[in-house]
Length: 110
Length: 458
Image (cartoon, rainbow over the protein chains, first blue to last red):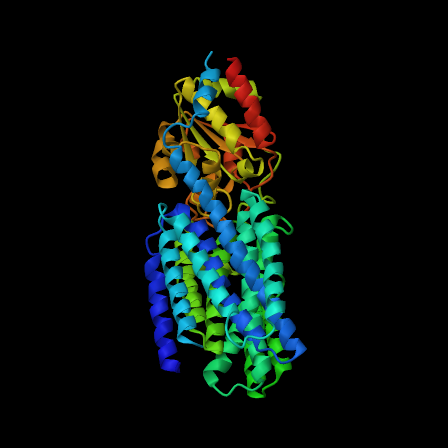
């Protein structure tokens, strides 16, 4: 692709990036940051491509180091985000008093 | 690359957009994350099956190693330590992106296009800054180093010089097609990352993590330009743009301008309200659990203000037990959640959700603040900076301007604290010495257990 096409892609992505998260509530800031963090782990694709065409040992090792780091970024990012969001699911079901909350309250009565 | 591969990359880019969209709505957040993970996996698998890809076995081994490191780290990390975990993952991503660009530069050696050369230098510098910057935020949050702003002598001059030097070295390296100079440029940028984050005060670190996250996104986009890979450009730019916006939203939620967060330690006086200035021998009123239990049990309305101390002590469940007991006695209880309670916006909501605290008892700051004037007792559990009136009343305090929970408007304030040690921002809290304040010293969980027992015995 030539530079103008790449620039077009870049600009469109900027606007989509701004637009897509413009209405986010404070409680989701941390998971959203973590999710975005996982997404840039896709640099793994770049790391694989560059390692796949390595000619010298130095290039190969540089590339493999990048693969390990990028994998940690991507996999770890998605897993940790999922763990955070698991908590939110638990909260929605507790809109009705959770079963163990009631006995705790009763015990407290004199 | 074949059309099939390019189409798979297109699907992945689409998945990422949907992931970000989903992650910004509470209902679809988890699906959003899974869609993103699916997209990423698709892109990786398709790339691995590319015809003519060499070194396939070492690459797969490296992926397995990365996964074996990351999954246990992500699964076993305590919920309280998640912000620094995110910082760490972000840092290694930045390093990976910088390495990819450097590797491509080493391979091509001389880059003919000016745009590509600029992108190589950009990703080498920004990726390195993101890497070491993230390591410093990790150290600050993990307590390996002090959370207070660190301003080294001469840093005001040294940091910009370092920035200019790394840019200059990068340009010189490209101009003379020298690999060594570009590597030196990246190393200089590694130092720059450390100096960039050191002056940031502890409470502001999460905003910086978000900023470095955006940096890594842009680094990935630049690497994508170097490799002429549209997927990397789209994904990196998406994160760069949304990360920048998110950084601004976070800074706004804390009521602090971004420039103040990054460079405040250089300009503003940071000594106002520091521990050194306030006499530590001022009298505080402490009480035992029984006294406080009486205060709570005969109140009409009690506010619980959870902070990081609660999270550290894993006291979410005990605090809910106390709240349930009080509710059973007819006391109205609500939780007042500061946007940055814990370590990051939304962090405390995650922790309380883990303890199944009923959703309707949680009040965000704007909803909670009007309630305090009619509150009999505000119980502050392991929080300090987010209730410090200095943020409202003391211009010159490092946290001045940060929105706080106005617990000082409640008729009584009870602090559950381990000691009189100042909070994360490293400044003293005048509210601790106020006549209507009572302190219960001890670990948050132990103190809460004592209170639960005392209320039961009434």
